[in-house]
Length: 166
Image (cartoon, rainbow, N blue to C red; front, side, top):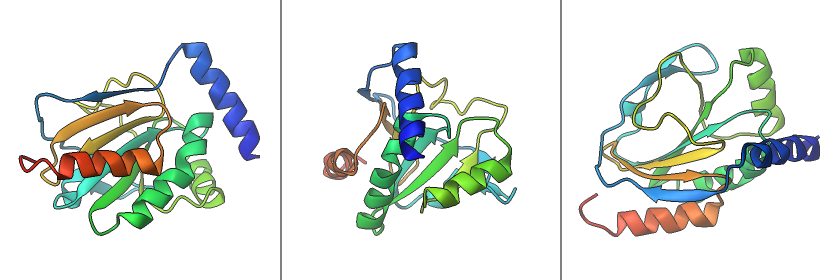
């Protein structure tokens, strides 16, 4: 089952011409939004302030998104004292189907559902998956398009955590 998700997503990613890339945000803009979780409760991004936050935009049909789930789980487990991970389901799939997917793939971090308004400055996205690093103050610091590994996230966290201005 995982292989079919990965194959279809890789094809989608290649078809759209997206290549993995990373970018550092020069203007540290505070990210602020509220989105519903899988139970329909609004969650405010501000509740995660005080720790580093990895925000991952993904979709059930995106193979590279599915492939990176274990990496995001691993990073979240290893760095839980310093950082949180949240996923944003970037699709209009029925919530019951997303819940089943989350359970089937053992996603251990909170999942929020995309809303109708763009989440500036994170959107518009350049592709899926898209992963963003926010400082403990909620500042947008870094963007990565394409699959990300736990090692890459740990490197980013170490890099930015070592910069005393964050």
